[in-house]
Amino acid sequence: MDTFIPLFIAVLVGLGSSAQIAMIGGMARLRSAPESTFTSMMATLAGIALVLAFRAFRGDPLQYFAPLDRGITFVVIALVATALLVMSMKGLNIGYAATGLFATVFLLGTAALVPTLGVALFFGATTAGSIIGAVIFDQIGAFGAQPTPLSLMRIVGVLTVFAGVIIVRLAK
Image (cartoon, rainbow, N blue to C red; front, side, top):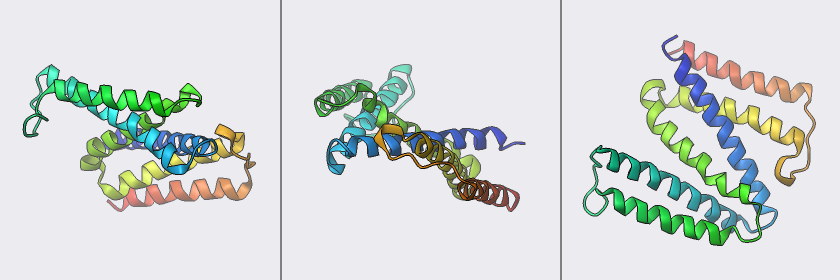
């Protein structure tokens, strides 16, 4: 039971990861793959920078050398990344701006949960969440994708991934 909540959070992180993947795929239908990736990365950079700025302003010491040890530096980074994100979003649905925030959650979740769960269990749980999200996004044809109906074999595949997570957890 001691790992249930971290495991559940890791599954949710995986669901977010599948949303990011589906959204980047949607952007790539309208822009090139590198452009879609850049847009996502600007949101990720802005998100991480804001988290670091918040920590610095809250009084948590940042373990960087100057000038990266100050909150204001990360505010500037967040502003520049946000400006680049806004410019890269021209002509896209505004919802795509959230794409990189899923990566922010994934990266922060990795740093927070791997020490508790271990790499294999975290990876398995996020993969389980990702596959659930992916099957749902495929089913509905999210972000312009060709819909792929749910089938018995897809359900067996999802259950197999979950079985793998349980095996990794029990073997711990």
